[in-house]
Amino acid sequence: MKRKLYLIPLLLCLLQLPAFSQDNKTDSTGKTKDDITITQVKKRKSRSYTSWGGDGPLLSFPNDIRESGNHVRSIPRFTFFFNIGTNWNYDFGRNVGMFTGINLKNIGMITKDDIDSVKLKRRVYTLGVPLGFKIGDLRRGFYFFAGGSYDLAFNYKEKKFINGDKKEKFNEWFSDRTPLLMPSLFAGLRMSPGFGVKVQYYPNNFFNKEYKETGNSGGSAYPYQNLDAQLFFVSFTCEFRGHYYHKHAQKRHSRFHRRIEKNF
Image (cartoon, one colour):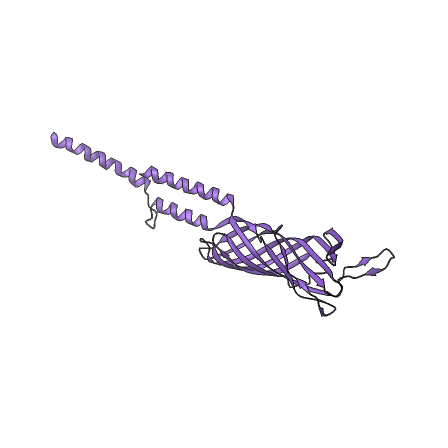
């Protein structure tokens, strides 16, 4: 009788084995549910996410601007506002990914005539859609990126200074003074924790040579007919992952921790 009583604790232990085996089921490869959960979290985390930021401080200047074949002096143009945007990212793995999005940029140039002391400031706001690839350590935020972009020019502004005094100023929406669509190429380096540097080049002429002005007397003129300028700029960029990604990543991690605590 005493021997049978000794068997009761042993039977109770045996009854607990199915419960443990159910909580830690293995798949055909022999991985437990915990291992599968960890793998799924890592895969989801590295796939797609949104990021926000933009070009930030931007230094632009024309690449050898010429008027009627003669070199025109240019001055580097620095601007901080408004160069912002958001990107959608897709990482194929730890080292390779791609991105696209929409970005607002303030780009332009400054030219100066030493003889007449005439300085002209010209700028355009654009909405650009980039398409690029990135290679490096994507999880740590250190990688190279390159690609192309199509920009829609929607606001043009021009200022004229003579001997330092502003004489003329005008602003036009969807102006014909520049091309409506401005393609470009870019490349850069991203460094943790989200800051980097980028160069971008617009191979087409910044001005529309066919733009025509009609004067009060009825005569017409083509102010940009003899101007050639390809825009180039360098910017200090920033990019930070969006709230949507962090929110869902946090939910997945919390579900994982609750499952681990339940097993223990």
